Length: 256
Image (cartoon, rainbow, N blue to C red):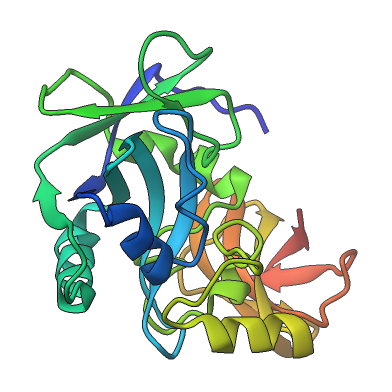
C-alpha cells in the first residue's frame, strides 16, 4: 500500500533524563532491556518500564547520550509517570531524574546530520529532539505508516491491561539474558512455558474503525484498535489461521 508522507513530522513524545555515576546500573535494574551495553549516541534501544506484575507503565526508547547521561523517550502523557516511578525506586542510587521539555521530530528519508534511526514506521527515518520548535506536520500524518508497520501505540494498542507478549513487545523490548528487573518473572514464565491467547496483527480491510469486532464465521475472535482506509490493527485470537477470511463490520478482512 503506497503511502504519501511529509518529510518532517512532529512527534508526540515525552522525555526523561537520568544522570549520574550510577545511572546505568540503576536503569539496568529497572528496565526490561539491557542498558549498560549501550554506547553513547549510537542507538535508541527499546525497553519497558513495568510493574512487579509485568503490567506496562510505559514503553521506552533508551538513548545513552554520554557515559553517565541517559534519555528515556516515551509518550508525552507518560513522562511524568516514568519519572515518578523511577524516583520512588531510586533509593540510594547516585543519579538524578527529571522530565525534559523537549520537542521531538521524525525526519522521513535518508539519515543526515544529528539524530538516531527510527524504525517504528517501517520506512527509512530518523528522529531528533531539542527545545527548538520547528514547522512540521501533525503526528496524525504518521498513522497510516504506523499501522502498516504494526507498531502499537499507547492508548490504542497499549495500556496497563495489555501483556507485553500480546503486543509482540517481548520480541523487541525485552532481554531474556539480563539481570532482574520489576515484572521479569511473569514475562519469563509466559515466554518459556506458555503463550498469549491473542496477538496484535495487521489486517487488510477496506474500512474499519477502532472498537469493531473481528469475526471468523459467527465467532468473535478479536477487536480493531486502530484503522485507516485499507489497513487496521487489532488483537486477534492466536488460533485464527493465517489464511482465514475474517469479517469486520460486514466487510471481508485478512491477516496481513
